[in-house]
Structure formats: structure tokens, C-alpha cells
Length: 437
Image 1 (cartoon, one colour):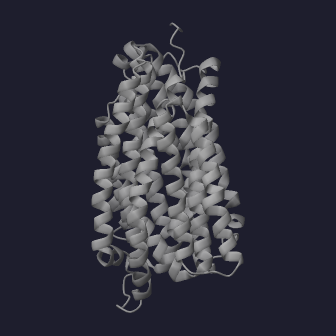
Image 2: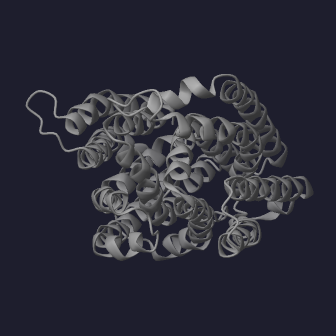
Image 3: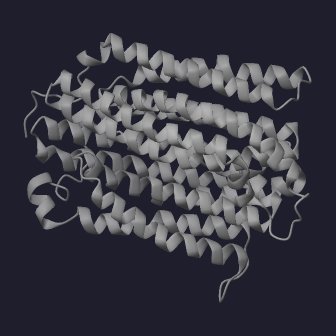
């Protein structure tokens, strides 16, 4: 996940150096692309929980079948995402951002949408390793992708050497290439004769209606909750764009910096899901609870360090996005506002870590419907309703939306801690322990 963070961060840093418009457009466009992708991501990644539970239950011969249900889901999902190309212009017209920013948003969004299928296939294949607790292959594949993506990103944005200067389009193309290469590497690692003997990764390619139905039962709520969460964040960013260009640029820079904290925590979220899934597959509730608490302690230690960095070095971090050729005064308004927002981000990181880790634990146990309902309620009550009301009432101060964002994560963190402590997740059956063969 840190490798993914490096790709995202350098992408936006290079775009910030290319033009302020490109930086302003990159976050709304990438969040919008991620918004439509995240529903399918939430479903596909649940294959990892099935793999984990089959592993914990001592049924490795069902692992290949679980992986293939996720891969079959990826095909129509990728085609739907590619079709978002045609909705790009009307979508970003709703944002009402400055014309040049909107033009760049459309370009970036369209290219990222085409990368949906390879991204989902790579995610689905990675579940073969993550679900069994083997994260080193995933780390190696992602690091190789990062090593290729970062310089390619720079070359395609600025036009270095034989590469044309494509600006934000170059960033999108480099990202899609970064999605595609892992698919090829994972396929080579997964579909081996040895894995076929133990996990049936080749022979179990057919659609299993019963297993696919169970996969949808638990995976679809996971996809919906992921979509609702990202929709709330997307709405937040789009509305900030209506507050002003400086507000949008500073928020974009802060969110890009926040990704340094966020993406590794998503890695820990997955770790919690897998460890809980394996424990629940073995019907070991005590181990599932212990695993979640252990991951939570790691997450809080990491987030505490990031929060301190956000508060102590905000100017340094924000100036990484200074546009090439701009004088000290040109970017000063963005930095001044960004310093204030970085303090909000510091508090947000700690609260978000609580919610993310406990979501991972609940998801690994199959409690996906509760997560979906809570995030839906929090999105409406804490984010969408209040921010829309502030805008309609003419309250365009940047503090209002950010306070709503903090209220949102407080709501989520509280709800998920209480749910986990009460323990209804302990009685959920994700896999059929009695099934054989």
C-alpha cells in the first residue's frame, strides 16, 4: 500500500509542478474515478475474506474456486467502468469548477476509467496471496510497478526524452500502465502447476452459482459501503471546488499529502480482514478479536507519527506541490490555507484510523451489512446534508466542510468500536463449514 501511495503522491506532485490547474483537476477527477471503481473493488476484494476463511477452515482446495468467482465479477465490472467515458462531461459540469480545470478533469477521468478492468483483475488475483497471509509477493509486484510507474509518469507529464509532453493525460496513461503490469505478474505467479495441485487455481475456473451467490451476499454490501464512503469524500471535494480555486487547490494538496497516511492504513485494514477471516474460518473468536486489537495498535502508532509531521512540517509538505516557474507569492495563498487544513488532517488521520481498522475486523467476520448502513447514515447526516446546507446558505468559509468531515469520522469510529465490542459479528457464517469437495 505504501508503494501505491508513492505512485499517487508523485503523480500529484509532478502535476503540481506542471500547472496549478492540473493539480486542482487531479484530485476531483481521481476521486470521481475511484468513486465508481470502489463499489466493484469492495466486492472483488471480498474474495480475500473467502480465501482466508477457507484457509482457516483447512479447505485449501476451495481457494481457487473463490478466486475465480471474483475474477468472473471483474469482467462486466470493467466494461461498466470503461463506459463511464461517455458520462465524463456531464459529470464534471455538475462540479461547476473553472472551465480549464473542468477540461482537465474530463481528460484524466476518462483515461483512469479505461484502467478499471486491469485494476480489478490485479486486485482479484492478489487475493490469492493476501487471503492466505502471504503479502510478500504482493509487495514485490507492487514495488516493481512503482519503479516503472514513477519515472514513466514524470516522462509522460513533462515530455522527457522520446516521450511527448502530455500533462495530465500522461499521468493518466502512466497510471493505467501501472494497473496493467501487475495483472501479468500475478497471473504468472498464481496459475502454476504447484498451485493447481493444492488450490485448484486452473480447474476451478467455472462459475459456481452457489458460491457466487454467497460471494455476492457478503461482497455486495462491502461494495456499497465502500462506494458510500468515497461518495461522501467526493461530494466534499466537489463542493470545496465551488467555494473557490484556492480552496480547491489547497484541499487537493492536503488530500494528496494525507494519502501518505491513508494508503498504508488501508493495508492494515486488509490485514485485519484477513487475520479475522482466518480465525473465523477456524472458529476461533478470541484470536479474531486479538488480531484486530493488534492491528489497531500498529495503526495508531503509525498515524500518530503522521499527525505530528502534518502539524510540524505543513509548509514543507505543501511546497512540494508548487508549480514550476511560480514565484514565492503565487502559491502563498494555497500554502497559507493549506497550513490550517493540515491541522484538520492531523486530527482526521487518527480518527480515520480507528474507523478503518475496526471496519477491517468486522468485514473479515462478514458483518458487511452493518458497515453499509452506518456509512450510509453518516454520509447523509454528517457530510452531504450539512455541506449542502452551508453552500445554499452562502456560508463559504473553508472551516465548515472540514468540521463536517471530522464529525463524519467521529461518527464512524464510535459506531464501529461499539459494534465490535458488543460482538454480533462472532455469530456470522461466511463459508459453509459443512460443505465438502
